[in-house]
Length: 197
Image 1 (cartoon, one colour):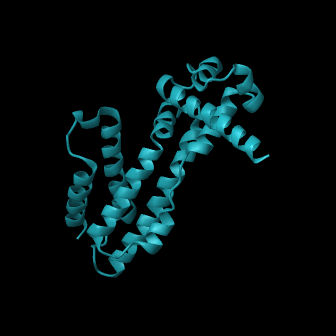
Image 2: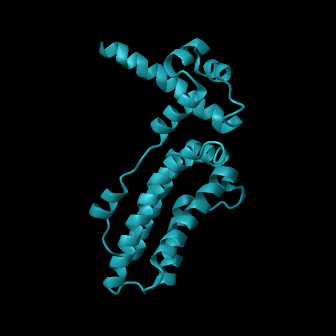
Image 3: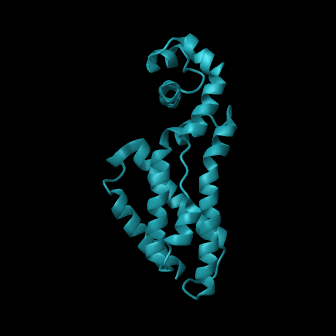
């Protein structure tokens, strides 16, 4: 029985992985059930039996491949209330999340008008991160370690800065700049610290 369940999971994983890859490359509409079946190495009947429709495949793929990172755990267990250290930790976590979700993120961007539910799903983790970052920044203000300002604007500026790096790397690699992730995080966190101190 376990072997059958593993085979089901393996088949589903292959189908969902193929679907996300093709939908991200071609777009949802252009990636046909036949294309997905061929890419996954199955017949289109297998896809229909398992999922019923291309929309059901998309929903299952978004659910399966929208990796989540426990942002709350990071804020509860790893923050030391040193702004530069903590921002670097948060930035590394954010970049890790975005890399794991890059196909889903790009698919959400491409399909935001036709399938807004993908964007809603991919927004859950960044929204959680923003909320935790705001709590952290408010505590830093209370401790007198940073100046008081519009905390949501500060949190979003930090997240948008990191999103910009991710997008530039994803779309153009090092064609925009050869600066790697570690150097970006170090430099941007130092600069950000000086702006909010």
